[in-house]
Amino acid sequence: MGGTAMTQTSPATQTRTPLIAGNWKMNLDHLQSIAFVQKLAWSLADSKHDYATVEVAVFPPFTDLRSVQTLVTADNLKLGYGGQDVSQHSSGAFTGEISGAFLSALGCRYAIVGHSERRTLHGESDAVVGAKVQAAHRHGVVPVLCIGETTEDLEQHGPSAVPVAQLRAALEGVDAAKGLVVAYEPVWAIGSGQAATPEQAEQVCAALRAVVVELYSSELAQTTRILYGGSVKSGNIAAFMREPNIDGALVGGASLDIDEFAKIVRYQKHIGV
Ligand code: 13P
Image (cartoon, rainbow, N blue to C red):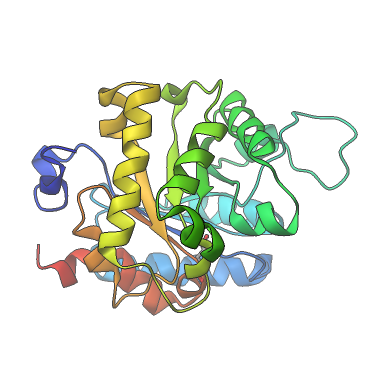
């Protein structure tokens, strides 16, 4: 978007606060989560991290959320947290599902929706993902909507077509003014050690922002954060964050290493601003 190249270098003109988010996936139990969040908060406090300049959030397993909430509240931490999924339903006979109402009651700011592992391992369709976006909204939780193409999609359709189609499908009937974060995570880059190039990721993120303009408005697109995810490390985050349409990262493996994650959060030190 015009002028957004400024956003990483000039907080005064920043229209989108960058978000660095750690998706723990099925790692760390509730006791481990307490130790982890405490150390992460200390590490970021030591380096005088300003959460207003770069927002930080973690996505622990559901069973950790109460522990994380208690710690965040007791120590008045500025760290956000959220669920890794949310049910499309609000309550009822849905064994094993977690309602957005429960996430909201635990102070979750966010819920990841439509992660590729849920799409492939749990058969979540675009329609289900869209229903989950709406469920998050019903309960005042901001969905972090994940989209991304497989290697086959890339070969057959090029870089943007599948993520763009997924975004359109998931946003059908969604009032995006209620808050939305988009996470572009190419499936081939997740856990592979082979991240997209910043140029590739920027191309797709720009196409995704154009969808938000088309479906809603350029004002909303200016404030909607679009993250990149897939083998993000401290060594490559700065290059992604230099791109005008990339507003943060959804980090998997590297978010489980406190020093590494803290370095990713502090990417501005490597970017030289
Ligand atoms: P990795 O950072 O381990 O590639 O995982 C990315 C991811 O799936 C975050 O949701």
